[in-house]
Length: 126
Image (cartoon, rainbow, N blue to C red; front, side):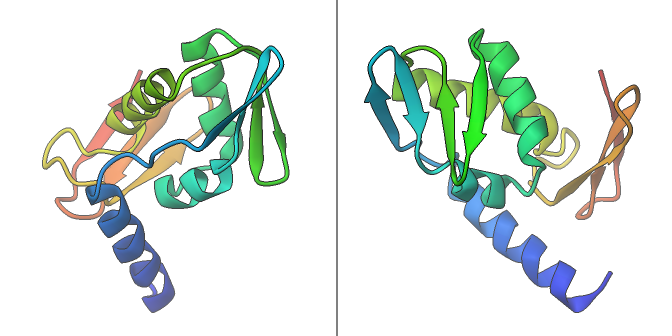
């Protein structure tokens, strides 16, 4: 692993250990805007499209990324978004073996694995 990658993982790990990021939401008519989506993407260290796909499925709403924000096609509360982000983190970030967030998501759409950089565990994802 390269020095820059280790620094990034240390930063992500320490930020995620502080808890799930608090969503900064703004209502716009019947829609909700997640204003700090790019910050969440950075903390989670995952591709925005992957996060959007999972959140969209979990919340049952269409979503569109516009710049640093995520536009959600219905009104949702901060509690609901936080619960969905926690569910995402538990499934795609936190190592089921050691409980640390120092992981990489590897593989393709059909077969993904969570590779833990702390304990070395590789966990297939469903």
